[in-house]
Length: 328
View (cartoon, one colour):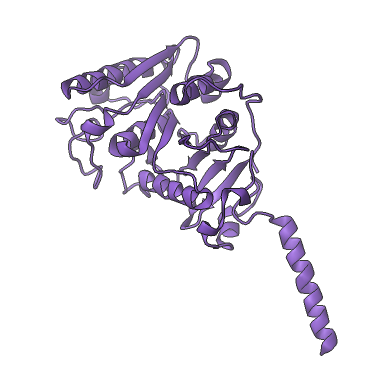
């Protein structure tokens, strides 16, 4: 019996050592992990007990939400987190290029000392994530993002109640609708070439205007607050195609035929709505020459990272250096 106990203890020791080598951080996962949701569910430690120092820095971590492991997100913690800097959230388009968003923006987050969060909205669970409040096509994407923000606060201690927000294409559709539904949470927002917009018109039902609709149960819009948030729309001058562009007589008549036209019309409508409220207009549009509808090209050739972070945070304190970061 004494030998059996020693053998059992020996095997337990080596099993624990092997587990530590394979999974050094139970809250993060390798990009090559075959079943990330399952691996995350094995560790349910109190998130309040996991300070930022316990998470790897300067790496893009793929995580699953502890309260719902089907909901994933990417997280980047810079080497030094700047006190008082808002968290930066970036939202992918319908190509689900969340990895590209996180790795290409990570150097800019590092330069600013900003925590980066990139939610992953899957086609299976968040098919219609761009419209924020549509629950019948899956989980509500605005609530999913709020849950992610709460978890990052618990994990790191950074203030996620107010943050800066960016989205590209379908992600920009989500971003501006989230902003209009949750304006008190957004410090500033940058939009990259949305395909179509929610206009600040209370006479039209959602999703074309702010009026009530069965498509947005429980979602309310308050122009008094969302018109105070500074917003810049970035769109390429060559972004005039209709691929993945919502086209129907109503949206064409209201917003135009191209992303450039629609960006300009929405900007004008938001500025006019602010003036009617007696507020200073805070929305502007920037058309970038030589750029079409590609996030990667916009980042590499149109300096989208510099433009977005310059608008959200002011002039960069130092150059971001390498514009790609690998996932862990």
